[in-house]
Length: 135
Image 1 (cartoon, helix red, strand yellow):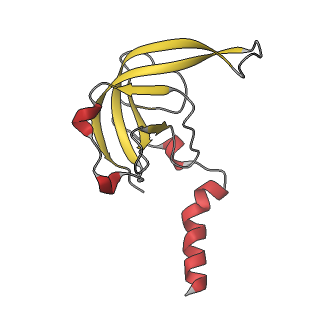
Image 2 (tube, helix red, strand yellow):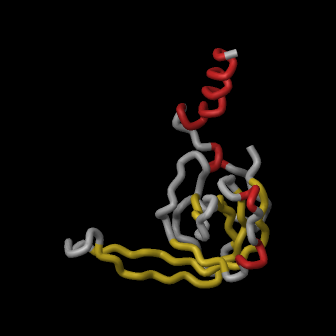
């Protein structure tokens, strides 16, 4: 029993262990682009992954479920109330398709007081669809 569980765990993690990220090569319908962390243009229809932790109101958006990065940009979904997650969906990856309505850049000093400045991106978006992420 234990070797079977260990083998299953290794197979599930195989893409990550091998340095491969299946989400970075996902196929999408025409007209959609995979959000991979690069800047999106206004009007773009993009696909990303969303995770909402139990008892947390914020959605965490990542380009991938395997190479998780919640720091690429801030996302504000204008119609999020129409796409509320059920309790059973919290803590599970969801896939979201959205249209970028606006892009804002805000200067950020990081670390504070360092004199080193960068830009923080914020996307205002409209959700087109939200569904459980497949395997």
